[in-house]
Image (cartoon, rainbow, N blue to C red; front, top):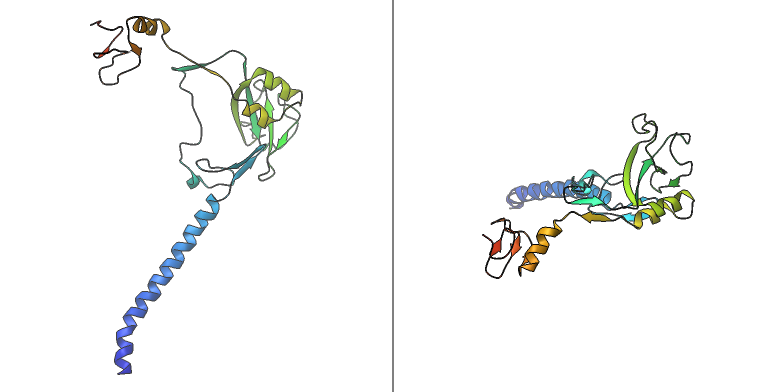
Length: 207
């Protein structure tokens, strides 16, 4: 009787053991991703940067691949006056790089330092492998000058943002409004002027 009982339980024990091993392996894999994506990015004055961003100490599966660069559609926007491009260079292996500001600020991840240039250096530090990577950011000129004078930090410069001008046809919109319509864009009919009866291309009641 005991033999029959053991024989009947053996397949159940085998299946249970198999499932237990698979669950442990699955948890091990999940825990690695959980741990890696639980790490925040701390760089310069910026702290606790998490999803959807990845890089540095966060694996590339910790965020969408599209969050590598951000591009501005310059057919719709342009920079306003009073802005300067600052180029930040990371993990430079020497302090003597022509065109780069002599001062640097530290990222608290992997002891990476950040240096900057207000104008394009005569030789690209990334191309010569003097720095690991670089990124250009538009900032207010007044903020860039304050950074150069060591009155503010990189975090404060970037935190002040920058302005974009929206390129719109004010003349066409004005004509629409004067005819009693509202400016917009109907993607189906391609109408520009929204009127009480229907969208029109330019002004209300204009066929």
